[in-house]
Structure formats: C-alpha cells, structure tokens
Amino acid sequence: MTQQHIVNLLDSIPVSGRGNRELWEVSLRECYAKLTSAGFKNEFIDAWVLACRELKQINWLTQFLSGIRAEHPTADETVIYINESVDSSPYSIQNWIEAFHHFHKKSGVLLKDTKPSRVFAYLSCCAEYAKMNSVAPDFLELLDEMLSNYGFDNRDE
Image (cartoon, rainbow, N blue to C red):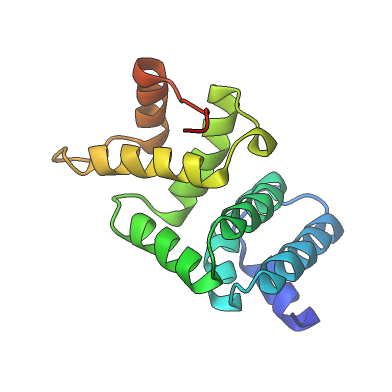
C-alpha cells in the first residue's frame, strides 16, 4: 500500500466532518496491512473502504473482514461469499456497512463474541427477504423488524 494510494483514498471518501486526517490515515494503513496479509486484494478492500463514512466503520470493517476471512479456507472463497450476497441484494455496500454496525448496536452482540459469518448470514437473510418485496424496505428498518420478531441465536450448533 503506497502513501499515494492512502492519500487518494482519503480524498475520495465522502465523509462529512471527516475529523482527524491522521487518525484516518493510521486506520487505513492498519486496515490494508491486516486485510492484504489475510489475502484480500486492494480492489476488494477499496470498494468497502470507499463506502465507509465514519472512522469507526473502517476499524469495524477491518475486524469483521479479517474475522470472516479466518472462517474460510481462502481469501478468494471469502470474497466470492461476500460479493455474491451483497451483489444479489437490493442494498449498496454502504448499506451493508451501516447494517453491520447497526446489528451490533441493536442486538447487543459484540463482534468479539460471535462469528462474523453468523452476522453476515443474518444480514443476508434480511436482504433475501427484502427481495420478495416490490420495493426493498430500508435495510436498517428491516433489520430492526427482524431482530424484534426473530432475535439472533448466537449459540454454536
């Protein structure tokens, strides 16, 4: 990851009140270092990073993707798993990032206390349900409804 790539990313992330640029730079460096060492390609990371609007989303994304990667044999398999779910849904990558964060806030389940693939599967089920509607509901509202109606089972089977 070059300094110029980080600068270009910082200039491309459309955030309001981005805050401390140095903190963003450090977080982006850590994100790329951790995720590239896990086998993710820069293009995949770029797509997700550019959808983040808050620094905490970058930090959370790093934890989430590295955690979900640890559950799959290869980075390529992980990318396919993620991309197929996101691409087939009516929601943008930014919507998914917001939903990841919202899930943890609303469910009370901490990222360290669950397998990231379980959270991703739960969100994928919500997205599948949304496709059955003529107009997809707001992802966060749908997530609230699903958590309220069905909860989240975090037990190992």
